[in-house]
Length: 205
Image 1 (cartoon, one colour):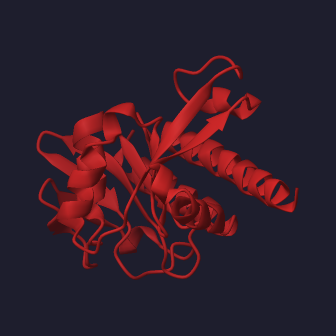
Image 2 (cartoon, rainbow, N blue to C red):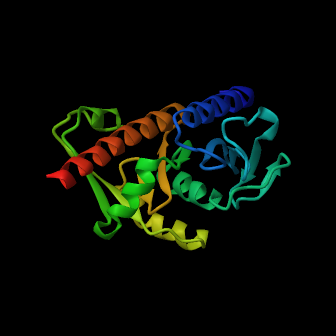
């Protein structure tokens, strides 16, 4: 995919996720790999409304998180993107701040993961071909030190089902390319809403 197509696809993805209320305000950050050697990520800059980002707003960062192209500032969470790309071989990483992901990640932090099982939509995750299964979506404690946060995430990525929750903060989802990362984001967000509704029903019983 050409650089222009990657930029257009990333902007389209951000706008779609913003319309669904998953990155309100300046929340969320999104990246796609544009080169592996040396590693470079195309990203939205920090502190911007992801629903109004234009191609001229996008930045390119290197494997150390430094801006190589563009005028914006790289998000502190770039380190998380780089860790996922390098450790999981991801081609794109999408970080959302939905209400469901934010609340559930805090509610189940003490358990260390959120179990999702028996749902047909699980088959939307790469490598799963039956509803008769379960996944454990890891939950890690939030930390303003992104080096510490990235290191903690790295300890859980090998078993993560293309997604990970940061307590009180939201979801990171990834895939081999942007299309797959978007699908995994949508699947996880769907499953998180089911889990939230299930929790409400359980609390009423």
